[in-house]
Structures are given as structure tokens and as C-alpha cells.
Image 1 (cartoon, rainbow, N blue to C red):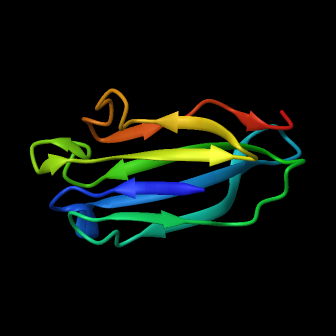
Image 2: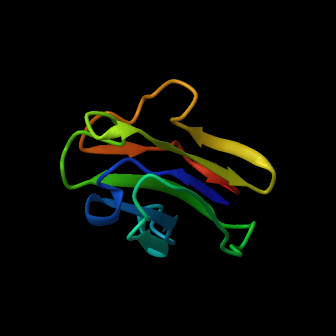
Length: 107
């Protein structure tokens, strides 16, 4: 589950990607991609994913200033199988070009 609190430029600038690890242990398989988040809104997005996979997330910002601060207070929370993987809303930590999670799932 992806919960996005969008800043004032999220629709044009932010892209969320989940990558799955392949047989060579590289995160090359794109499992999910979401963009065009409505500006200044909170929205929840759900995607069914194989719980036996190993994943990483990345949120990119084309404006290179993240979802916090310059264009309003924003951020995102990622949960997988009921566990919070990433929470940039808690500490306003998405303030640059991209934000990455650690590995999660069956890794």
C-alpha cells in the first residue's frame, strides 16, 4: 500500500517505483510504477504483490527537492504485508532527488 501526501508539484514531478529482485539478485524487474499524484492531496494506492518476492522502492522527484518543504509539506508511507517499510511523513526525510527503501519481502 502506498499513501501519498502530495506537495504542490507532485503531479508533474514525482514517480514511485517498486523493483523486484531477479534470479541474479539484481533489482531489475519493475513490479509497480505510479505517478501523476494529484497536487496537495492525500491518496492511497493499492497493488497486489507476490509476498514471496524481494523488493525495493524508490520515489523520484524531477524537481530534485523531494516532497517536503519547497513546494509544501508532503511525503509518503509504504506498507507491505501489514509492515511499514518507508515513512517519509514522520520525519520529512524526502527532501532531495530520490528516496529509496531497504530490501523487504522474502529476501
